[in-house]
Image (cartoon, rainbow, N blue to C red; front, side):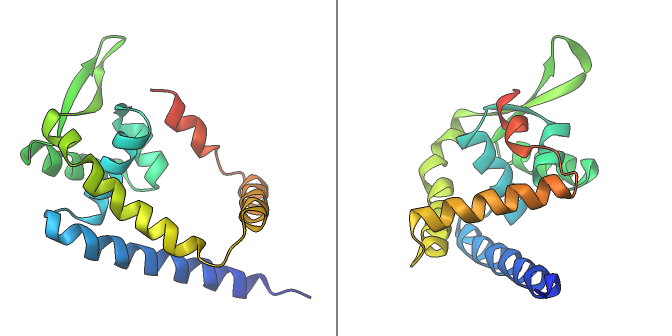
Amino acid sequence: MLSIRNIWLDMKAILRASRRRINEELEPLNLSGAEGDILFHLLTGNDAFRQEQLAELLDIGKAAVSRTVDALEEKGYVLRVRRAEDRRAYSICLTDRGRSLGDRVTGVYERLYALVRQGIEDEDLLRIEALFSRVAANLGAPEERSCCRNG
């Protein structure tokens, strides 16, 4: 019988190695991995995520998102904008300075994705994606992609 333990350990190793590479590449930009993750999602998804959406999408606590957004705001990369429909909630939006980092930040993630894809055919990658989606559904995980489209 196939051991789910080995799959679990491989997934954890993949995440750990990915975080290490991202942190190393973001360091010259004076960004942490968490800051880079938020900027990347703002640059490639929706330019106005709610903090709660970012917490869910990145699987980190709301307090950690708040601290990271504080740091990005201090650096001039994002702004908190009150949401008209809920004055208690904020959208996190890129500033022009944040957008100016676009190619450099997205390049970090694109290089990582290119490294991950080495030697993997498109059809294999599609199969892996389908299998991971099924595993996530089996575990009752929310559909993360829908978070990116809700604004």
